[in-house]
Length: 344
Ligand code: GDP
Image (cartoon, rainbow, N blue to C red; front, side, top):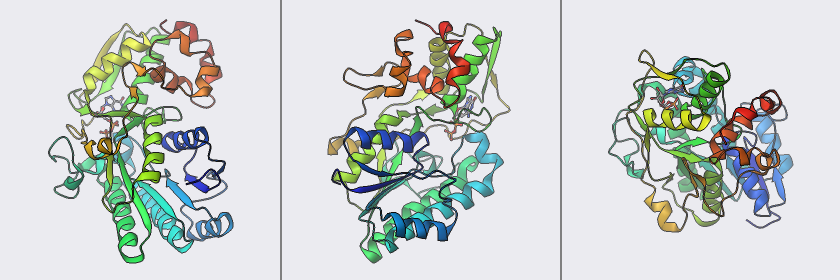
């Protein structure tokens, strides 16, 4: 990629896509292309073909997908399977037709077999049964990885895939029914604190382990891979260690400053017991994560400008978690009155 390359970020307003967009801007890429859902319906094959013909992107980051937490996956299996297949078919096939130079597709750690050996190595994919709660999403994402490999083999397309672990950061989904665990916990504890509630309810047993990567780190990895990786085998992008959900809940509780009790609703599913990824192939190429879940960006790490400008940063020593919640579009103002409650 050069500063003048035409680069399309599909899903540029989401958690992952907005991080990739910020990183590309930071690195000086000037011709970024982003389309809102209203401007381009990725489920519509003709619209995607027209988009490719008109905009002629040279590089494509595929951060557009139907995503959601454990509950959303169970509630909407049809949408998770159909929409993801459709979006990726349209974007990957269209990229070949439009002679896109390089495309990066994103899988997810949750598409590995439920009981694959930990940490998860790339060659564990398709080695056993999937976790039932997200099998629909997993089947679609596995098909996307295979499609990239097939187009590489048959047509020589430079289509690569990365396998990110659980993500968090600005522009995440905070809907309590549909979101992933981290945004849900940030919101639950924040709201419980503001309401002076005695208890806050978390799901499952608290014993599963999850690995978390900040979206800016994933964005750096995606841009790095676009510039340095061209293999058929997909590559894991993780942080390198994981945390039990129970400890995560205590961490978020402490950061938010909620002093009530945590209750565990065991009628909710636990999902996969563990999905720590082995990211040693990526680490060996020279990429390392910079943002720690507990301590935040290390010296030299950068908090998104949007957040720094709102001067929330000085109110807590772990701003990357709190501000991920506060940085929700449209939520800043309504929460402003509560900022004084944040721990200093
Ligand atoms: P998963 O990683 O695909 O299983 O999806 P999630 O991020 O939704 O859930 C991860 C783990 O966190 C599961 O064991 C959930 O039961 C647990 N969890 C605890 N509290 C919550 C909550 O409030 N929301 C969600 N989504 N998960 C929760």
